[in-house]
Image (tube, rainbow, N blue to C red; front, side, top):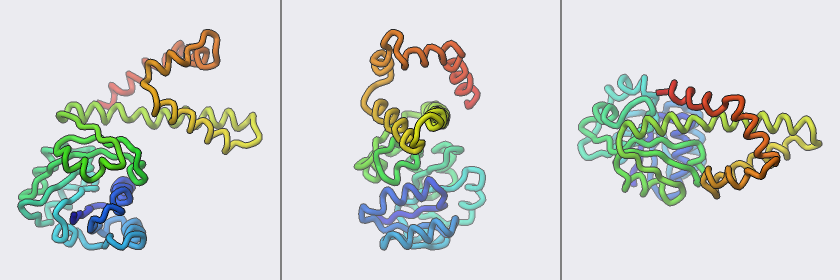
Length: 240
């Protein structure tokens, strides 16, 4: 597949790392030049071109631009009828992206995470699930969303990642002050949280960790009493 990537920020770069080994011919734009050079130096099938060169060389185009600059950048480019466009722009709906790339067609809105570079990452998407599955599904979990409202809700809910990471980081700092190997302590906590959540739904996991008087129950009840759950929901509501 001939794939072009407009914009070469952290997420777009991770996407390229995730698909570069699948035999595609990939052309990346000169934006974020250092990342573009790193990709081209790493993979023989990745080349660099200016923005129009990316369009001209590609049948599928991935938009890794910031939504606030997309209209200015894309207005200067000539797309072809029949080209398929995948948007990574969180600040623009699929319909808005489609209007910017005519006569090409924006077929999917995809919200990946940095983990897509190595695989094993969730990928939220709306639109052409078959194409997204073909590109990313062999290594990642594809979550197909029905409409813009579902995408907006998922985008809000995924923001839980940062506070969860902060909680693990704070717990690692607390542990690090009490053990000889601080780095090992953080690794333990990261693997503890990641492996248990990966292998169990939340409700049964909470129940399994609900031993009366146990460490997990006592800390959870303490945090619930402090209002952490309601604070989280209020924060999510504020993101809409």
